[in-house]
Amino acid sequence: MDQTIRERILAEVDARFDEQVEFLAELTRHPSTRGHEQGAQAMMAEALAARGYEVDRWRIDVADIRDMPGFSPVIGDYDDAVNVVGAHRVRNPRGRSLILNGHIDVVPEGPHDMWDSPPYAPRVEGGWMYGRGAGDMKAGLAGNLFALDALRGAGLAPAADVFVQSVVEEECTGNGALACLQRGYRAEAALIPEPFAEALVSAQVGVLWLQVRLRGRPTHVAYAGTGANAIEAAVPLIAALHALEDRWNADEARHPGFAGVAHPLNLNIGRIEGGDWASSVPSWCVFDVRMGIYPGQDIAAARAEIEAVLHDAAQDNAFLRESLPEVICHGFRAEGYAVAEDESEAARAAVSALEGAHRAVTGGPLERVAITATTDARFFGLYAGIPALVYGPRAEAIHGFNERVELESMRRVTKATALFVAEWCGVEAV
Image (cartoon, rainbow, N blue to C red):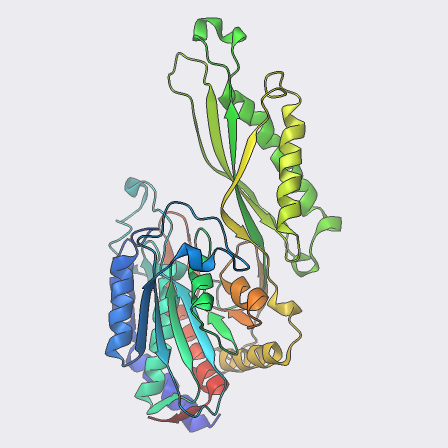
């Protein structure tokens, strides 16, 4: 790329950065947890329309996607599950097409009194913006949008189709990204600016969500020995799951992409409830499980092994032997994905273009990192043959209290994204 063009693009990011920070703050003010994304999506749709993009806004229909590879069982309904895509289309493309993807949904914020400031009242302090979703991943959405603004400010436009996607459901199924594929959005590469500190995600784990349901035998607590406590019965089952976690994390079982990661697969008991009355032996207990799996690890086989572990552990409980745990698969059912294993020419070219853009902005090499979380990259890379690059700003405490994103990191990622778009798609005069 011509040095003069590069400098113009980078200068345009700087010229608009205060506006970008304000945009991120306004987007973060929307409490876009699952089912409540409409306000934030309306803001994204309006921003895309104001820039002249062709805007597609639709409610996801489960019937359209339930038979597609990668579909996850739905929690609740999708009456309010709305995706937004802004399209820049070129009549005679001279470059390669691109998807700029990001998710608008955020996880619940937890007790507000455990935050230093209200989670949906974003504040800037010490070069960081605090707020639920500021890092995961509204800073990435803002970066996608303002990277394209920088090209336009420099008098340029991508010389190929670009689709800016703002999707729901990433935090619990990924069905929002899947719905974009069903809608027909395809490109020669995808870039997802998830907040992993300006490194390229070389591999990511898959995720299984399971719900374990236990039945006990209720009785008055005065005769507790004649009952069966469903809550206490959960304790050895959870211990058995952690033993399985240890086996899957052993060196001999580890995926090579995670060779340098101390504990790649994490089990989490994310929710538990049971019983009806403090003086009654509880007759029921339900706990929700999240378990990571490796790229290439078969989901059905992993689930079967988890169920077998639970049923084996139940044999040590006299009551559970006759009333085995019921295991329900709901929500996430995601395969792992490793772009590092994609040997296609498109993948090599996309990574090379991102490496060049990153080096031009930072002066250093593009680091690779294997992450112990999952992203929507798997839909593009595994099911559509689209190499998916995950590369975004530095954020801390995502999913926790006082979530924050480093603003200068967002600036650098926006610059690198703009240069990547220019290199990958080519440019033409506006």
